[in-house]
Image 1 (spheres, rainbow, N blue to C red):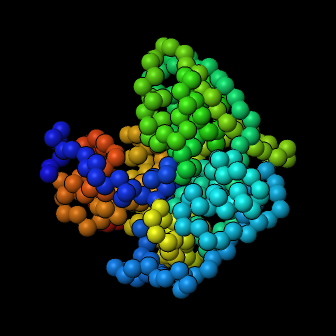
Image 2 (cartoon, rainbow, N blue to C red):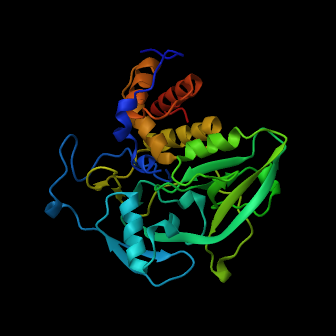
Length: 330
C-alpha cells in the first residue's frame, strides 16, 4: 500500500518491536544492532542453551560499590534484575546503565547491545524533585529516551531553550509525572508527545527523579549527548545482542554503512519526534536496506513497527538517509 493518509498501521505486529522498544529504548547507543549473528548464522535457529557461550560481565553501581559479576540474561529487563540481585536492591531502583563510565554520559548509554569487554555501570534512583515550568515557547528543548523497562528520562537539553533556563532540571533525570499524571511505563515517544502538546503560555509541573551521585562525582550540569561522530557500542570485537524474545546472541561489529545510516535515522527521530533511540533507528535501517522504493519501505515499517504512527515526510527522509548511506554520500 503506498504512502499517504490512507496508509494504516498494522496492529497485529506488536511482538515484532525492537528489543528495548518492547519494554521501553533506549536506548540508546546500539548502532551495531544490524550486524550478522556470529553464533546463529543467517537463517538458522538459535543453538540449544547448553551450547550458547557463557558470558560474564562486570558491573558496579555508578555512585560507588564493589564490583559484581552477572550472566545469563537475554534482554534489558533480565539484565536489570541480575544487577539488582548482585547489589541486593530492587530492579525498579535502576534508572539506566552506562558502558565503561560511571558518569551520566548520554553517548555511553546501554541499549540493545553490550560489547563483550564492556563494564556496566548502573545509575540508581536518587533525589526526587518537583518543578513548575512556564512554557513560553512551543518547544521545550528536551530530547526524551528511555531505559528499556518503562522509565523515560531526559537525554538532551537544548541550549537557550525553555528547560535550559530551569537549572534544577538535568540530563539523566527520570520523568515520573507530568501535571500530576504518572508516566512510568508509558513509551518515551508518548512522553515526548505529551510534553510537546502542553499549551503555550501556561505553567505545568514535572516530578523528576535524578540519578544518585557520589560526592566526588558532582559536576556542572551537562547539556546531554552531542551528536556522536564515533560512537561505537563497545570496546570488544563482538557484542552481545539482547533480545526481548529468545536468547541473546553474539554478533559481529557493525559495518560502516550501518553506523552511518543508524546515526542519520536517529537524528531524524529527534527532529520529527523529540526522541533518540538507536535501537529503533537500527531496526528501521534493517527493514529498509533491501526495499526498492518508499512505498515498499512504508509497508514494511507498518508490518514491523505497527505501534508507531510515522509521518509520511519522516518515512521519505528515512528512506533517503538509507539510500545515501548505501551510496556512501555521508
